[in-house]
Structures are given as C-alpha cells and as structure tokens.
Image (cartoon, rainbow, N blue to C red; front, side, top):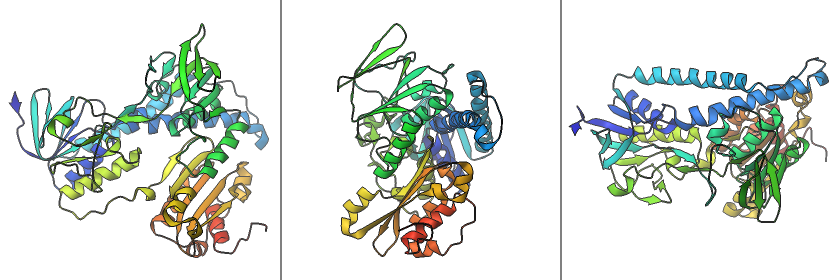
Length: 462
C-alpha cells in the first residue's frame, strides 16, 4: 500500500452537489482539498436527477404548447415525440454543464481530483485503490440512490427506477407510478405530456404529501383536468408480469394493468460498505447523524447532502457543503434554517413553497396565532394572457410575519425567489404590500396576495 504524497486540509468523499461545493469553497479559502468521486462529478442532480428530469419536463411542455397553439391563433401540427431527439437535447444540456463543472474544478490549483471508489478507513483518511488520502478533516458526501419496497425487485425492464426512466428509449403507452411525491408527480407530468396513460399510486391521503394540503388538493384538481389518474390512500401489495407488461395489485383489492411500473418511493442514503460504521460514525437507518453544523460524533468528520437526514434537495447539499468548508476554515457560520429553503416540484402545474405549512404553523404556534389567505393568481393579467390558473396561499403569524408561502401554477419555480426573501427576512404583509410589482407579470400576484393579507384586497371580492 502506498501513501498519499501530502496531508490535505479536507478529504471529501463524493463529488455531487454537497461534495463539489465544499471543495470549491474550501479551495477558495486557501485550503488544500482532495475530492474523491467514483462516477461523474456533479452526482445525482446533474446526471440522474434535477437537470435531466427538468429537460424532459420542458420537452413535454413544448409538446403541450403545440397541442393548444390554435387557441392562441397559431396554427401548428403536433406529430408526436421523438425520444431519440429528446434524449439528444437532454444529454446535451447535461454534457454542457458537466464540462463546465469539470473545468471549474480543474482550474483550482489546490484541489486534487481522485477518480475511484473510496472507503473511510480512519477518522482522518479515505482509501482509494490502495492509496490512502489523509486529511485534517474528512467530509462524507456519498449521496443517495433510488429506494424500493421490501420484496419489490426493480428489474430495469418492466419495473424501473427514476434513473432508468430517464433513459427510456420509448414513450410507454401506459405506466403505473408507485409514489406520489416529487419524483412521482414529475414523471407523471412528463409522460402524460408525451402521450402516455398514467396512474399514480400514493399510500398517503394526498399527492405531494409534504406540501400544504391546499396545494396538494390544487394539484389533484389539475391532474384530473389533465386526465392523470391517481389512487390515494392506496398501498401497494404486489406486481406480476403479464403478456404485455405488468399488473399492479393494491391492498384495497384494485388491480392496475400497464406497460411499466415506475418505483418512485424516494431515495435512500448511499452508506453501506463504505467504512462509516467500522470507523465509529453514528448512523440512523443508513443516514449519517449530524448536528446543526453538519458535524458527526467524530470531531474530524462532517457529512452533507442526501447522506444526512435533511431535505433531499441539490441546493441544500450545495449550501451544506459551503457551510462545512467555511467552518473547517475557521469562519463563523450560521446553521441552516431548513424551513427557509425554497422547494420546487416541476410538474405541470409547478409547485413552489417556502416556510411552514398551515398544519405545521398551527402545531408550532397554536391555531389561534395563525392567519391564512388564499389568492387566485389565475386572475392576474399575465396569467389571463397565458391562459393559466394558479393559487397562492400565505400563512402568517397573527399581526406578525409571513411564515409560509405556498404557490401552484405555471413557472412558479421562477417566483420562489421573492417568496424566499419574504420568509427569511421575516417580512410583514404590510411591508410586502408597499412594494410595487411590475404589471403585467405573474410575480404581481404575490404582491396582490400580500395586499389582501395587509387589509387592502383590491382584486378580491368580498
């Protein structure tokens, strides 16, 4: 066994959003870093998640626009979806971002990129192919992978994961999606736009169950209009192969026939066999346990991203990586307020939220301390132009700050920025109401909603 040529300030295991952001910030602060990645830099988000999924959804949006173009006075013909062309577009987006990330990382002179599968072998060392990389600090950032259910085998043919769905060479005639969370409803939306018949099976009472209930119900209404079927409060009991596809059985006795079953029941941490437990890192059901500063029980080891039990979002892992880099470099850092993180689901219609749901706000502060308001954003001039509906729900502490903003409608992902500022700056409705929002924009609906909550409901009828 050979030794590393030098001692690093930080050795990072995993080059996804959390790992590479930690590496970039640490080198920016003058630290020497070794970044170890067994696959492609950028991790799940760039190669198997956020970016390729959103490219598929945009292709579906273009298809939907063509179908209704005559309603805007534009004559066009929709001839179908060329999946080879869709993949070429999607992969081109990913490849361009990947090359950019590689260039950015390789330009850092105090960063050593290590290709290979690493294993934690001590509180200060990771081993790759017989070479030991020693650091004053180790950051674990090994990410996540698709989950399944006990006894449910993902065969990659008729029963597939989200990663396999991204590479599917055809549009299935019909598909059952097991799981109505973010991944499930995004694929439901994309496949419906491509022309598939879709049924979502969700064991909880609503789609996107982590969102405010009013948002979940609004999405369910929109999916009904789009003829996307769903079974709520229905648990999976089994799947069998048929001559043409699969037959999915539910505990309520229903059976659903389809070409494919997509298993979208979430993602689990990648931690098995990597030496974490042997070195003594505290674990909980595969996750690495950390405190609010992302420190493990071992002083020289931190962990970030999907490996830890925080929000499984690329931008969360990115922020966690930066926090750890700054802390190791001796900077003063502030723990992340995870309620203040923007969340977006890119189905059609899009969902964007930040802060507390009405249910959580009442549980934390008491029902008598919480005020809510719903505003029909589809009534705005810009949304009339777009022929688009939508809804904004605000959750406020009585006579105080807005503590939750929940939006559904087209392009809500582009509206969440102001909402995030409103929550994180603890703005009161009257403070937002005095801001002049441009007209006609979708963004002005957020201003109108705060006008209403501030007692000046100009476009809401009593």
